[in-house]
Length: 170
Image 1 (cartoon, rainbow, N blue to C red):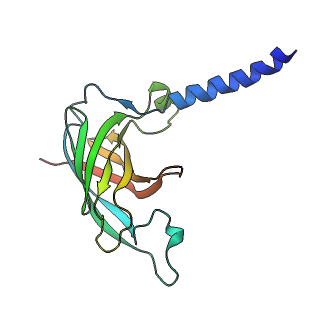
Image 2 (cartoon, rainbow, N blue to C red; image 1 turned 90 degrees about the vertical axis):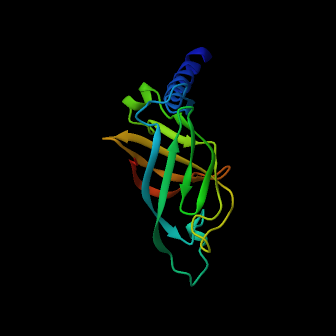
Image 3 (cartoon, rainbow, N blue to C red; image 1 turned 180 degrees about the vertical axis):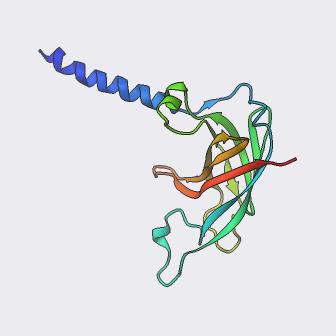
């Protein structure tokens, strides 16, 4: 009888595991030629730049500014660039979902990850250096569409920029 109760638990674990496996970032051996090159766009960012905007000191009003986001994706899947005044260091491009993840519309097709933002994004308005980050995105009509997420250990990623569209630069 205990075996019959155990089956639904195993089934739930298998289904959840399958769904999660559909959204795991995996290395790319050969980068699609449509992704290789220089990309540029803009990012609307809140000031002061804080991981938790709830920690804005009393009396300080949150404002917004636009900064540039520049990426260079290389054939070996390394990525470099800048967000505002911060350099993108040590990043790589990975596939962010499987065909199952795509069919279920979970996650994005690609993700820039494993690197840091070095330096202030907006000098005088920034906290924390370096910052771990990700850039999940899809290639849509010749543009990279996604966002920039600030990542800290044991915390849900904070969106630094949403609805970013990068165009290829000549």
